[in-house]
Length: 346
Picture 1 (tube, helix red, strand yellow):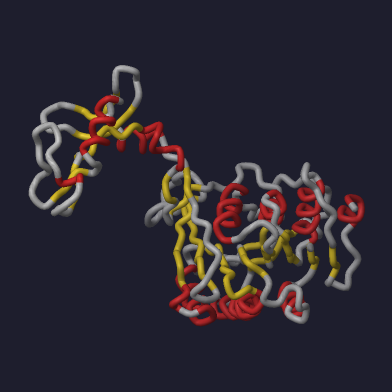
Picture 2 (cartoon, rainbow, N blue to C red):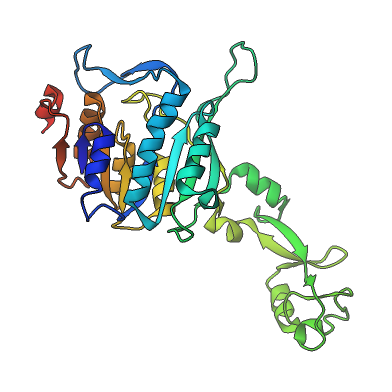
């Protein structure tokens, strides 16, 4: 469902819908950052008049006005969330700490999960006072103590592999070694018995029974250089990837279709981690529709809201161009005619 209109009255209306209130599994929003700027389209894929091409005005008169604007919407977004739902709020580092205080108020400090640092671009080289900024932040909260969490893993980099597996065998395979023993004594049992005339050090036990150690040795998985150690090969270890941490490198698209377009792969990570197939994902500032496209691609239902004619047009265009395109509902809640480019697409 795509809704063209002001998200405040739209969210209030959605709360009257029993199929939406308390049913949304995941909210992602990328609200205006209170920068005092007016954003116009960059390399757009549709034709707009100069008046229509203004994407949105991020021109709040004061920080307090901006924070109250956001607070009103966060209260409503909490109400649409399911009890096991969660919310990601993407903000600029200049306002992020103030927004966190509001998030603590609306969702509760105890439901704060992560402050994710997102590397958004390459380091800046121009002269300025202070350090260059190439990051923003994503505040991640749950609605209650229970939330959908599928975890998130990412591939090991070449640097990771070289650091974790510094040795190379005769076949060119990278590996590392670990002790054959582990902490804790075994008073009875196979892992406390001698193996090849050796006992584990005091306070430790063999990782495996002697019979298993013999099998590992036959397979060439024990390195005999002084004290024997177990070989761990990179290609066996890295298949599952590594746990994703709270610093992400998902850079903004180099040629965005919308001024604040976000990284598609980043949205896929968020949606896969915090929702399941068939769940409802909501973006109340949907912009170019990246959240909606990612949700559709991953088999989620979605609700997108935006008051910008350009945003709605770009979203419609991207959604209808998907290979997996499914018909969706477009509501016009503005009381104004749909812009001509939208009518042409539809």
